[in-house]
Image (cartoon, rainbow, N blue to C red; front, side, top):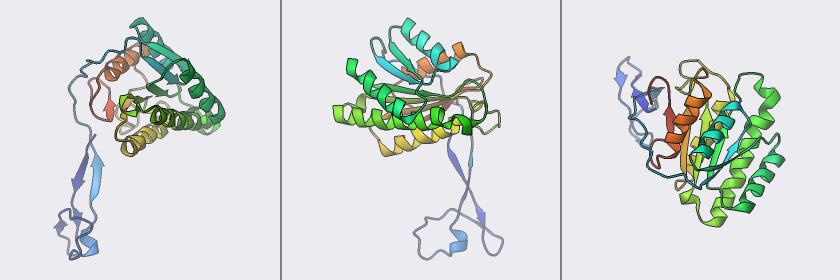
Length: 228
């Protein structure tokens, strides 16, 4: 989803082209640019990486999480679904999962239906945040951050909320979290995958599988009638 620059109007009503912010000779009125988010079609994912035997920790006990875990297990991966209700439970869940063997895939999910996000923010916003914090610290300590993958699965409409067809607003928080982490930890592979709330759990799981098995690609990917 690229940012597209638009011109602004200068003091005399003329269109002002985008100008670097540090250009000292440009009047302040002509420096600011406006941006709009647009969606662009993407080619289908190219799943080339094997997940056989890989451990994946899925945060959230929603129907999406359970459907994804079922598909992953059927295809040879080793998923664990946890549903921490507090930040303390999230920290403990990540530490407990790591005891058996390294967990290089962390998947964040949202509730399967909308509702009062304030009443459930501890479980669906704060717990995933602390799970990410603990997991990334663990991967850095293990020296395998470059081999790790962080994924958020949301239902903001398949276009990250641009069309207003939003299922669970918590997806906005998770997308912001993982995109920020992608900038902070350049070695970490990060992907935010968004779907319409009406898409079946099985179809969501199948699409997420393809994205997980594609090692490289954009940080944000939406799925509607096509990949974007």
